[in-house]
Structures are given as structure tokens and as C-alpha cells.
Length: 578
Image (cartoon, rainbow, N blue to C red; front, side, top):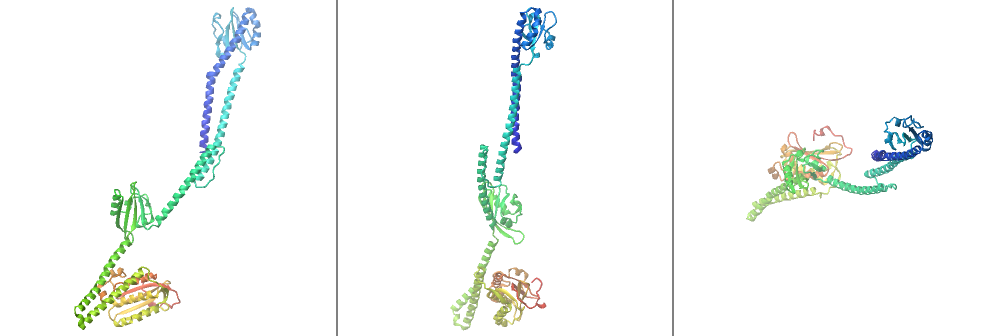
């Protein structure tokens, strides 16, 4: 900008001045110089005519005598050429070129420019002979005019160059100030008004640029704020959002869309169908070419658990579309659980309700009058109503835990006291089935838990072990420290054990390994599900492993309260992986 503007301005000025100088030279050569030559020739003719008339009044012999006097008075170089004789006069040496030039006969001579290129004239004289003449010195007026013209031309060129350079410097300075001011505004700096008093036009331009820059900064700030808000919304959304152009290329997407669809990080600019090979998605994109709205639901298999996704698409006027990806995995799972729950509850309620109904109908039909049958049907009614009550209580407990309405009161609990309390409560049932129970608890072991919840966990695990352990079987409860943060509680039995195919679903509601035996022993199918929710609410974990040589081991891990405990004996060590 700096050299370019000045260079262009100087080049233009020099070009104009050169054009002026060339015009002056041409005018001088074609107009002024011929005019001056004509004036000089006329002046020469006039003086030669006067001299010739003076000489013509004299005799040929007297002409040579006065020739020198006439030459000095007229400022002329004169040479007299007689009709027969040698040339005489003070200017014959200077006028030698005219003497050498061929001349017409004296009778044809008149005052005329015989050799104008030599600056002389020839005048024939009456009575014979000729007079040759030329100016003794250049005409002063002609040289004065030429000098003045040269001076004016040189002065004009010099003044033009100076003014051009000065104007270019001033303009370049103001332009540099304007450029610096404009660059600062472009960087977002807040500048005051730019004052250029010597250049009102540039100052007006600077004011307009500053006004435009401020308006542009305001617009940029507003757009940046809207972009940040939009970006924050996209980042916070759990649903995936994508914008696709008419060519099927992704132009915008949020992290949720990348995660849900398993897309690579460099997805922008790529075609979605090239990265996600799903027929339902391809069909939906084809439908959006003709319709304004379309949906597709499919299972996306990636590393880990497959996800069920629902994509809704809205077409845009430019041929592209906006896709919103919903993760329906949990919703569909909950819907399946709800259906299974309704089916399981209906199934669990149907048998006891049918028994109660049948027993009541039998009593109504007359069995009430027979003491033996009446007692049998009353026992059936009592047994099944107790089963219904247990089922309802378990459902209510599970519902309170899942909805967060179960109030946990955490405290430091001694595991020895908690296990002894539960064993004492269940001892009558242990005696009835002749079960042998051994308890081994590491001394001083304490956990952070809710006392009521811990009791319910231990009761459910022990009752579950008692139900599936044959009479005369052996049960064991063991508690010990696993590491600096957790304590382990194990409930072992030597029952039939659980096949590996059933283990992943043991803690689901109403799931039974042997449905017939479970109902026979009075289980509701909710005990282990309640245990799972309670343990997880107390920041613990649980699981099941096979017992050796037979049976099962249900284990629970709870947060440990660090106290000075007795050293762990070698026989209390845990098996690897438990």
C-alpha cells in the first residue's frame, strides 16, 4: 500500500510532465521556431533592403568604400559581389558559403532568402552585382523567448515533481494512519475517532470505517454469544444432534451424536452413510428427500452393550436435514421390565388367588360343615394369604427403595453384632430343618451401613440359603476385611447350586431358577432383587460364585470402617477372584 500508492502517483505525475514537455518541444519545433525564423528573415530583409538602396545611390566605385560603415551600423555581415570582379566587404569571410552557392544571373536576382538554412540573404543591385548579407549575431528576442520557454518548462517540471512528491507523502501518511486505524478495528480494538484535519475526505472515510467497525464488532459479539449459547446447549444435550447437507455430508454434530452412533472424531465433512451402515438409516434419509419428517429405530452394535437408537429427521429447504438421535435403550428396557413385571405379578398372584377362591367356594358349597375338610381349606386360605401379604410387602419395599423413599440412617455397625442378631431371629427355622450353621467374623470388623437395611440383606440371603439347602445341610456365614476400604460378607450353602446360565439374572425381580420349587418353599422371587437395591444404595457390591464341592456362595461388599482389628488368620483368607 505504501510504495504502491506513491509509485502510482509519481508515475502518473512524471508521465503527465513528460507529456507536457513533449508537447512543448513539438510546439517549439513546429510552431514557435518557424515563426521566429520568419520574423528574423523579415527583419533581415528589411535591413538588407535599406543597405541595398543606399548602395544603389552610389556609383559602383564608391560602393566598396561605404560598405564597412553600413555593415557596422546595421549589425550585418555584408559582402559586395561586383558584376565583374572579386567580392569585397568585411563579411565575405563569414558569407563564404553563400559565395560558394550557385546564384542566378543578376538580372533575375531580387531580395529573397537564397540560403535560409545558412541564415543569409542575397540582393541583386541595380547596375550589376549582388549584395550578400547575414546577421552579425543571433536575434536577441528569439534567444530570450527560447530561454524563457526553456526556463518555464524546466520550472514547471520541477515544481510538478516537487508537488507530486509532497502530495504523495501527505496522502501516504494519512493512508498509513487510516490503515493502522482500520487494522486495529479489524482486530477488535476499541479506538477513538481518527482525526485527519489535513484530509477531510479521508477523515470522513475513517469515520465511516470506524462506525462500520463498531457495528461489525457488535454484530460479531452478538453472533459469538449466540454461538456460545448454541454450543452450550448442544454440549449439554443427552440427545445427539447432526446437521447434514444436500450431499449427505455432516456439517455439525455434538458429542452425544458421536458417542451414540460410534462416529470417528474427524466426522465433519464426511458422508454419514459411509460411516454408519444401517439400512433403516439409509431408508430414512431417502424418505427425507421427499418428506418433511421421518423416523427410524434400530440397534447399533458397538463395543459393549448394543444400543437401541431412535433417529428423527427434519428436512431443510436447502436439501439437507437435521437429525436428532435418542438413546432408547433404557426406555425400551424399562418398558420390557414393566411388561415382565405385570406379567410376573399377574402370574404370582394368580395361583394364591385361585387357591383362596377355590377354598372359599369349597367352604361355601358345604365343606365348612365337615371339620376335616374345613380345616384343610382354611389352612390353604391362610397359607396363600400369607404368601400374598409377603408378595405385597416385598413389592412395597422394592418400590420404596427404587423411588428413593427408603430413608437410610448410616452408622458404624459391628458386623459380629448384626450377624448374631439375624442368626438368633432365624434359629427356630434352622432347627426345624436341622441345618448346621457356622459363623466366622473377623474381630472388630465394622462397616458403614444402615442397620435395618443390613439386617434385611442378611435375612434375605440366609433365608434364600435355607430354602434351597436340603434338611441336615450345612450353612456358613463369614465376614472379613478385604482391603483398606471394603469388608466382605459371605453366605455359603451346600445345596444343589446354580447353573452358570442362570447366574447373570439371579438378581432380577421374579426370576427363578426352579419356579416350581421356589413356590413350593414360599419364595416371592423378589428377595435377591431387594438385596441388590439395598446393597447398591449403601455404596456396596454383591455377586454369586459356586461353592466347592457343591452349593453357592452369595457375597456382599460394604464400605469398611477402619479400626484396630485383630490380624487375619490364614484360614480366613479369601479365595482368589472373590
